[in-house]
Image (cartoon, rainbow, N blue to C red; front, side, top):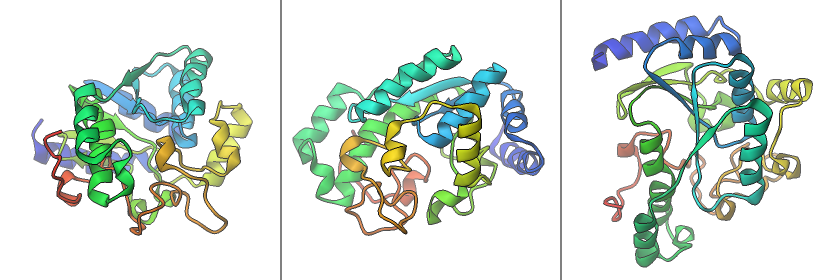
Length: 249
């Protein structure tokens, strides 16, 4: 299907999903044909999606980006989630040569030194593994919500990802954190214990802190940077990111 048709289909599906519950939205995504991939960070939103996928046995591949810098609690939750739902979560790792090249240029923890270095690290540990996770996929499911940050305030249920030439489905776009928490409590969904310690958004260990009272949900991600709309590059076009000297990595 060409880009114009995919863009038109995204608009139509966006309208359809507005009137469906979460299971209905995921079921519709699973029915679109081709390879359907859900990428989970094991955060609270993604655990809700995994719960519904597992309950309904939807034909959706569940994958995660094992960056090599995740919290031990996150790694433990991968196995716990697989056991709870009888699913396999496919891990995608950064290439050792890419990590070594990054460390040689910036230092292992060079991401603290500049936005460019931080984006380069995310590129090596997240963006490139994501490309492998989505290879051959026609639909990509995420846990993005409008309430997570200003950068995500206009998140649709379905959009056309022109960079990856696929449909991107955000079934929790209109859910707030209270609704998420109620479902987690009602269904006893397994969670990362860091959520209870003040980490609403959990990424790599060196790049994530607990938030302070009054801060946004994603304020603990790359907290040393000033940009309130900071992202890792997974959910913004590559052209919108700073120019990186390490773009070949």
